[in-house]
Image 1 (cartoon, helix red, strand yellow):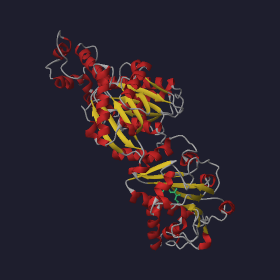
Image 2 (cartoon, protein in one colour):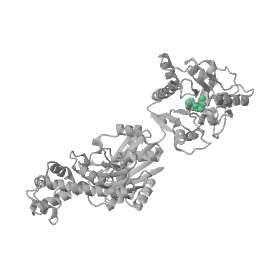
Image 3 (spheres, protein in one colour):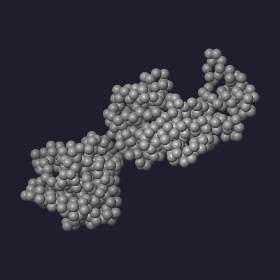
Image 4 (cartoon, helix red, strand yellow):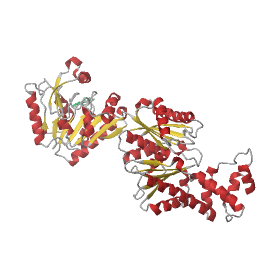
Length: 572
Ligand code: F6R
């Protein structure tokens, strides 16, 4: 089932009309079955307007009736045929002989139902079915429980249907108690189905129809198994939301999104790493801060989340995952939860098909791999070196070695002294190593300076960047081996602030090392924020197929760069 969300009922009606019109343009003589009820009326009005403009022609369609109250005369205005006639058949001038009616007359409705099914079968079944959703999960008048092979037949209306039709009849006690309905067997065999759902009162039932078990107790849930089903729902009916969280050492970001990928809530917290935040509880509170503010800015509570993915630095060992899951569930994020290492989220944010090898190069370097079958590996504590810190410390070491004449003089010296505001190399070393002293600046913020010096041609800087690139490339190859994709044409996804520098030297060095053993690897540089990957994984957890339109919608609604800013070299 494909779910498309629209802002409001008008947009739902326009889109419904677009889909019906496109179908009819393609198959002008198709057999279609059309719901009455309130929901499709906007789409039918839109189609009537388009006919007036010469943009829609339903006169060659074979139009079938979907359901009918029983115990009326065939020309009773209150019949569902009467409603369909006023809203669609007349405005579209559909000739009578093109209409397959259900009987409203209770003289022999069973025989009339059999004739309907035989005529429909001769016509080849429904090509298109346009349905509404009942508050109890009925489609047409297939009231629960309804088996998926039930034919067109007489039914007794449920209490919910009597309630929801009361207004139409001017009182609940005036609603006919019986009806005839197109069978689930016929409806589920339709070659294409459009289900229109509008309004907050349909939210819970739509959630079950889309994501719940397939059961006779919720007849519309069988649509999960039918071919070419498009559900168009307006935002009020949007059943549930997903949460994506990226917890790093400098900050934690949480995003709440609707199931079509629209970001509707954002939140930030501090260090969400249970190893790096001082205490596990401190890491957890940063995660809670970010999530709680994302939920409150979305105007929803945690029970509206259908799936949540937490992509966290500090989720390294099985006991970390267990600890985090227990704590997060206890805090109220129930339902479907996935916890991954943040290297996996970063990779997921940049790869197109959900698998590949990731090198996330920020303060540290986080390497990961996901195979096409879902097998995943993250380097965590296996990895030693790389990232902005690796570049910074090796540059500092080169400056000390050059001062001793162990390596050739390097322009790094002239660049690093003003960076740390020191007069000479000896004083620089002194500041880093004197008893009781504190470092004169953050070494991991040196990366852009080192890349600048290398880009200007300094041989020492070029060499150390190549070495760091080769090191990171080796970890990427190890990750590919771990999930068994070393020989495949995998995407090598490069994310993180260090790769945003204009010099290609570091990227080239990583790619060269990786392609020396994985010649088919395809480098992909991605600027997507790591939390993007967490949201995508939450979508998948909610059974929403992550297609291009979801990625585009996420990209269009994710907050701007300033929301994510920490310091220029921050990893995540
Ligand atoms: C009407 C029909 C019903 C309605 C459903 C939703 O022909 O078959 O199943 O589609 O009850 O009704 P509304 O759209 O009024 O909420």
